[in-house]
Length: 261
Image 1 (cartoon, rainbow, N blue to C red):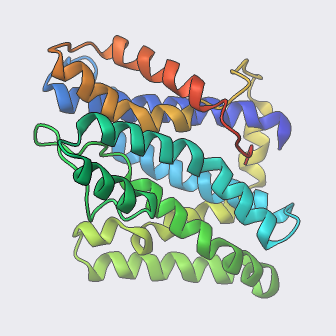
Image 2: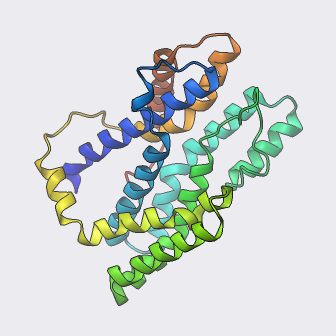
């Protein structure tokens, strides 16, 4: 797994950049025609969820207990998440009470209660996926234990079917894309952990990539949306500039105390 981590990091970085460019184009209202075929944000997020399911099950397989697992998960996402929420809220909230409400609700991953708004867009439209991730973190230990006891194909297959039925029952509404509806993707990642020998062999066959020591994909995913708002407020529409600023801030966030998985 360790020798494949650089390859997975490269894939996650490419996905984060794809989502970031799409959102910059959305906020600025400018999308170069040559970029359109490369912008697949929905697919990118779905692949993120599958990879997350795979990596979480890898983490559970080598964890030292439930408390160790929960600590690692929260240290992986929460320090950077809370800092970005507080800072972006401070920049864009018109009053202190609005800032407090925005930070408080987002701090407990209920961003839909007080999403905040800048020029018709949420302060940070990427945050909805973080609560979906956290929901999976909560149920993953139970799924993993059940898969180990009753069989991964049986348990995770049932989770996929249940998730797809939930999506169908919600008729593709906003609720259909929240956690129960996304569980099928995480469970698919779990199946890759148990049965994806071909996936691992493909990774092993790929050339080793030189990646930054710290994973920047999560930081870029967190900060690009508010950074795009800042540039737009100054009348600056520059995709490369927004990406460079996002990478710089992500490099700072990557230095916060985190777990590697």
